[in-house]
Image 1: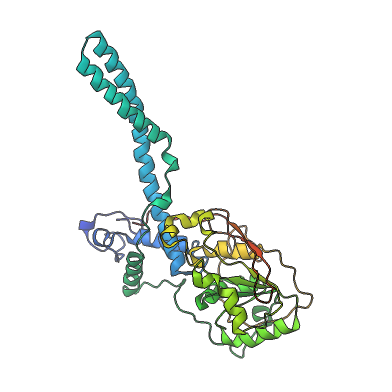
Image 2: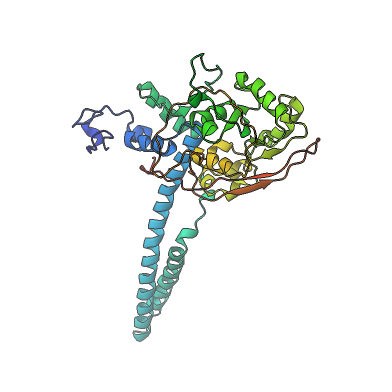
Length: 386
């Protein structure tokens, strides 16, 4: 085990506290299947080095990705050795055949021919080592990950950036500063789940992209009347929809129009949600084995940076008259090197994804949109998560 505090290495038999700095370990690598250092690396990867808030689904996707990297590394190592051994076996087999013929030994010739055959197979396997499909393997256990999270918290180790319950149901207090709470609204983002509102707001997407964010359930309720007013007053205000690639998620637009929660009849609706046909195109989702559920996956398996970057990439013209909206003051997050305040937080998926959805509803007013959920997902840390 390596201490996450002082990097001192020690064996499991040397105790559950660091022999150097006395750091108390939470996990037993033998019984838990993970170490404190690797769990902290997992949290760092999911939060982009403590930059973003994240959901449990995003934590799970990061765990799957790290686990897949480890599995692929093992396979590649074995196949590389096999390929090299195969070449040697072929060479040795050829020599054996020649010697067998010289000595007139049928047995030696047959054995050598068998060695050649095995060597050729190993050689071919080594040549195609990188074509192994990660989608064919079993997904990592959600239960194991949940157990690690619970044990970490039981040891009074907070996971401050993990979002598990909506917490923005109350309007800001009477004290306010215009530069904190006011921003011109250029779009409305409607998400399927309440928790996704917290994800976007606490990561400053609403301010960076001048978006009013609420869920299809009308959460947070204090913004619902403001959203209705904006839609009634501004016919050009774009409305974006973000949902899961599940049967329930893909029907979100229909439900939203039928519910009458917002005055959407005759408006431009941009469905930037996830659909089952899009999932195979997203390389970062491969390690979660989504085909096991017919690609019906939650949209927040995609890292926040990729979600924000994809939505920010939609070509939406700002409205001519700016409006203001209140959201609870989001915690400040450190700026990333080379980042700007208007790029939606950057991208954190490890493949390019572009989807276009053409929707038509009973009102005939919905239009298609595209979101590019792409970028680089590797934010450092140990990718071997047990």
